[in-house]
Amino acid sequence: MKTRPTIFLILFCIFFLLNKGYAQNIGSCLFKNPLCFYNTNILNYLQVLHKNQQYDKACNFIYGPAIDGKSKNSIEEKLSDASFGYSLKKVGIKQKTNTSWSLTYQRTILGTNETFKIECALVNDTCKIYMDEKAWNTIFK
Image 1 (cartoon, rainbow, N blue to C red):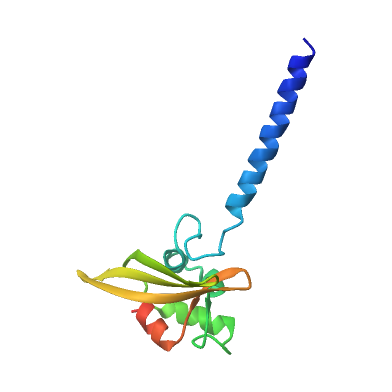
Image 2 (cartoon, rainbow, N blue to C red):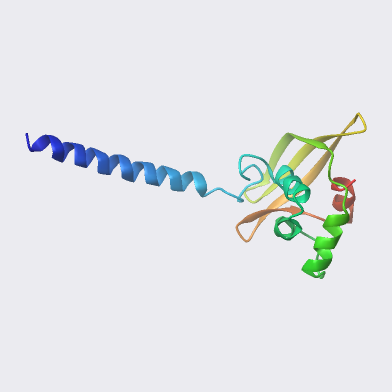
């Protein structure tokens, strides 16, 4: 009879350890590729931050010449003035290298569907959108 509690204890410990390891593997991809942003993708996540006026958090997910050399306050101000309230849907993704991707999106503005592409890369363990003036004008239309 003493062996049953021991077996249950061992099984419980094994289950607990396996479950903990599985949970760590799931959480480890957060922000490390463009499709791993809290059950959405990088541009939709940026749009949610924009709609909630969390421009300071949104600054962490863009890089490139459009923001290089600018203060965080000026980037936040530029984001706050950007038009980013349209309907948006990811329609394609192409992995260029292990750390860079090209994403295709479709948006609807005034009943017109448009398709556009953005470039993303893994920078310091965080996936970010490459933002030059052309990409800025394309995304924030």
